[in-house]
Structures are given as structure tokens and as C-alpha cells.
Length: 105
Image (cartoon, rainbow, N blue to C red; front, side):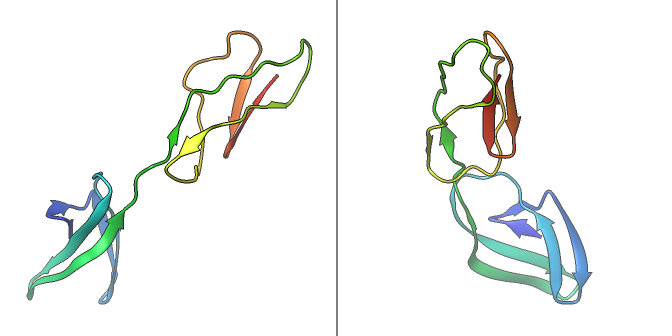
């Protein structure tokens, strides 16, 4: 199984007509898919499309002393986040990431 000529990171043959595969990393755009079997190679042109990941800008929040559960607004471009993470710790207090939100206490 290959995506744009690059082998899948892993794959499982579910049955005679279905494969579950993990695609290798690539830049955004459509790629051809190919599957090699004992009977030969099956291919489909532009059958899989990689989508660019969203980009988050720097986040900053000013909160009142001793306050809790302050939402931190994220500025994203290029799509919708499916999860978030904190790259560096808050200078004071605690920043907590959960799902697609960050709160500061």
C-alpha cells in the first residue's frame, strides 16, 4: 500500500475489499494510491488528499490574581484544531490543556 509512491506507515488487510492504513506524513495535496497484490498493482489517481494542519499563533492572557478557570483564546489559521497542547509553562499559575481548550488558574 502506498500514498503518492511512499509506503504506508502501517496497514491491515481487513478483507478482500478493505484495507485500513496509516498514511505517511506529506505536505498538503492530492496523491495517488496504489496497492500491490500477488495479482499485480491496483492504483487510483488523486484518491487521497492530505490537508494542511491548522497553525496556532502565540497565546497570551492577563488574569486577575486568585482567579480560576480563565479561558485562553487561541488564534488559529488554516483549519480547526482537534486537540491542543501547551508548549511552555505559564510564568505564574497553571495552564491546563484538555481537548481543544486551555484554561489558566
